[in-house]
Length: 160
Picture 1 (cartoon, rainbow, N blue to C red):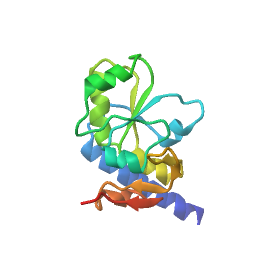
Picture 2: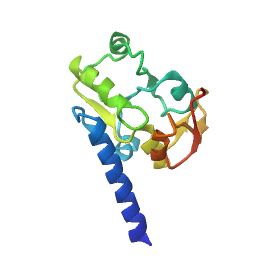
Picture 3: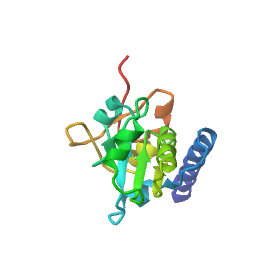
Picture 4: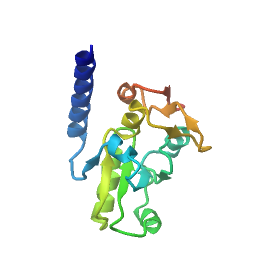
């Protein structure tokens, strides 16, 4: 039974690897959700999704910076030290790579992309928070197509 679960986990990991390789240029190093969740890992956490996604679910203490209307200068004004550890995330790690790369090009030296994004975070049963900073099991699923990567929590879909 353990082998079956382990092999399913590896298969899901490989599929996510393939998805990220297909969409990302890998010009920003990844950090795993397990590493980010470790108590000794200190980093500024930036949420590169849209406001409605952030309101439904986000990582604790994450700073909303958006994606469609991301403003590099505003974000730089929040970040004081160009060498501080910064982790950028989105749903899966695709939009966040774009934003993290802009920060790298602006001179930030310790920027990482959260591998698998908030979906992988929730899939590993780490806590997420809503707009009232209360723990929630609801998670913004982005779209029907992308929600297949979210295996935990209550999927909330965008309003049309």
